[in-house]
Image (cartoon, rainbow, N blue to C red; front, side):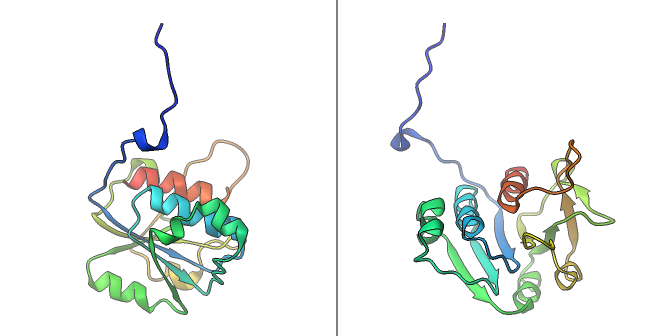
Length: 164
C-alpha cells in the first residue's frame, strides 16, 4: 500500500501561468473577504488587484491573518471609478465579470484570453450595472443545490482555477 506524507511548505512545487490576470473588486466590506481575496489571488498567479472604494485597513488582524501576508506579495491599487477598465481594455485585456447574467457562459466550458480582467461584485448586490456595461463577457459557476449564490472568495477561487 502507498504511504502518503503531507509535504512541508518548502517541498511544494509552485506552478506558473502564462495568463495575465487582473482582478477588479467592487466595494466590499468584510475583512475576511478582503483577506481571502488577497490569499487566493496570490495563490492563483493574479498580477494585480484593483479595489474600487474598498477601505483597505491592512493593520486589521482579520485581514492579515486570513491573507497570510499575501497582501505584501501582490500588487494592488485603490480606485474610485471604472476608468482603469477602459485603459486595460485599450491594452488588450478582455473585461469580464463573474455574475449570473442573461448571456453568461459556464466558466467550466469556456476558453479565456491571455489577458483578462475579472470583475467581482460585492457581497450583497453582485456586479454593478456600471461595471456590467463595460464587460466583453460574463461567466457563471454552475450550482447544483437550491442556493443561487456563494461566498465571493469561494466563487473567486473556483473561477480562477478554471481560468488559469
